[in-house]
Image 1 (cartoon, one colour):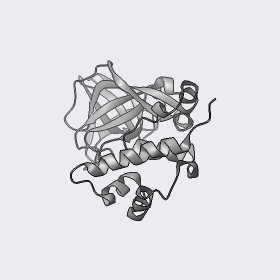
Image 2 (cartoon, rainbow, N blue to C red):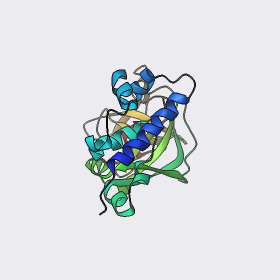
Image 3 (tube, rainbow, N blue to C red):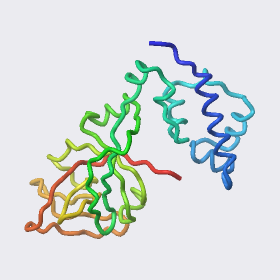
Length: 217
């Protein structure tokens, strides 16, 4: 495995930060919020008071992800295979409101996740990214988020967890109300706590469990 050039990666992060600051309405304070640091830290970084060699790989990756960069592009092929896992981003859109009929499994692109992190969640081979639309799961999952789901987690359902489901011809992201026998009783919206009871005469299928979400700010 080749040795990573932390300083070169850091230089790329600084360039990306400057690109953000060149956009209308973007301030150092907003950039600091995005990167989860304080404004003074951003100021010092832009003055060149920090180098990449002062950061771990995981820290650098976190900053890159917060800036919308693709960390996998900064690693050689072997490093990329060991450090990152690419998960397919599908066209499928789950409603967090009135329901969605977009169920396409066609892949738009992929999103890279740190290998160590995603393996703690399960087997990446069973995972996919879907789009989420609507406000009924706010503030837990905001409108226009992308959601990582595990398509293998469709049995032994956990009461109160959020799942990707097919119900009455539409697909949803909802919190499930599950009884002790494992039967799903209702779909719950986080925004107001309302429950949509499951009609046993209507086609209902669990498609996966939500593990993580992300969105632009």
